[in-house]
Amino acid sequence: MTDRPQAAAEAEQPAKPTTHDLPADAADEARKDALTAASEAAAEHVMRDAEADGREDINTLQAELDQARAEAADLKDKWLRLNADFDNFRKRTARERLDLIQFAAENALKNVLPVLDDMERAIANNARTEDLSVVKEGFHLIQNKLLHILGSQGVKPMSEVKGQPFDVDRHEAITKAPAPSPDLKGHVLDVVENGYTLHDKVIRYAKVVVGE
Image 1 (cartoon, rainbow, N blue to C red):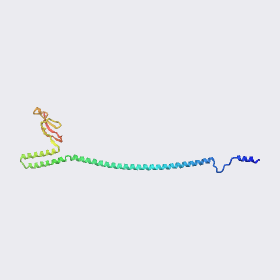
Image 2: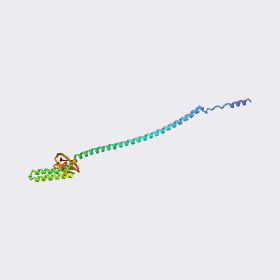
Image 3: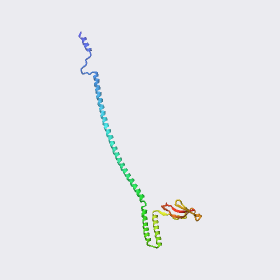
Image 4: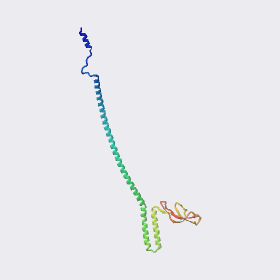
């Protein structure tokens, strides 16, 4: 009977832990190591994705930069060509304008040259003739030819100036003289130099004597 209480006492004693069971602190450390490793792996994966995205962004930006540089070079080339064309146009226009100013009267002068030839022939002929009527006729022919040439260019002499009322837009009074009659006061008494028009525009005023 003395053996049973002893057996009961032995049964009440707690079981000793085995060598394979981990302490609580060691289990926590193991769990922490697993979480750390998972976090580090996730962070490394995120960094790799970020680096890949960054490389793609850099490549895209580099392509856009290359395209912008090519467009800028093309625009610069077009600007240089356009500027050169404009400079050539400006020089050509200035040269043509200068030629126009210098040779504007070329056709008119070429038409007048035959009159000069007629004058030279008339002078040579007058030296050999004593007939005054022939000399006068020659001068009238040359005058009519010159007036015809000027008329073809739009130049016409003012007609019937004498006796007209004085017109400041067509006449230039060089002097005044007493009018022979009251109705000639303020009128042209005499024409010293006739006036001329070019397509109805006065290019030379008639120099006249005005009655007063």
